Image (tube, rainbow, N blue to C red; front, top):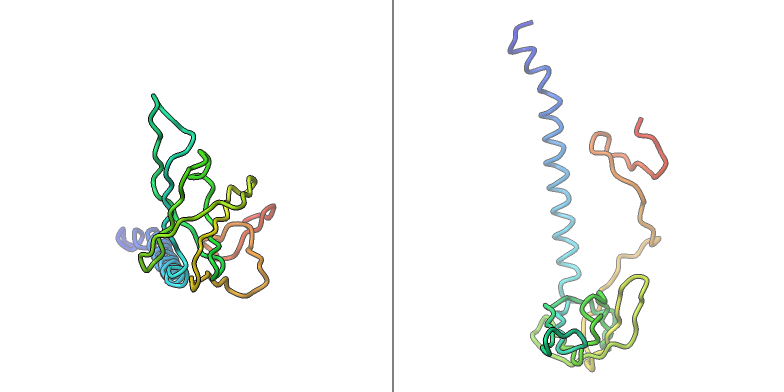
Length: 155
C-alpha cells in the first residue's frame, strides 16, 4: 500500500465526520428557520421604564426583551429578568408596530417567567405543535444519530 493510499484510508473517517457534522448543522439551521417563521407573528418587543434599581439617584435602564403572545385577547409571556426591579412602566410593541401599555399580572419564580396583559384584541397567539408534549431527554450521538438517554452507555 502506498503512503497516499494509507493516508486516504486514515483520513476517510475524518471526512465522513465533517460531512455528517455539516449535514447536522444544515438540518439544525432549517429547523431553526422553520420554528422562527412559525412563531415570528406572535413575538413582541418589551421595554421597561423605571423601577427600584438606582445608582447615585439615577434609575438603571434595562435593554428591551421579547415576549410571546399566548392569547388573542392580550396575554403575553416573557422572561422575568427585566421585571426584577419592578418597573413603573411596561411597553409592548407588536409586529405591526403598535405600542401598547402592559401590566405584569403573574410571576412564576421557579421558571423565571412573567405573564403580562395588554389591552388589545386580534393579537396572533403562538400555536404549539400538537403531539404528546414530551421532549426526549439526552444527547443525540453524532456518530450513530441515536438518542443517548440519561444513564445509558454509548456502546
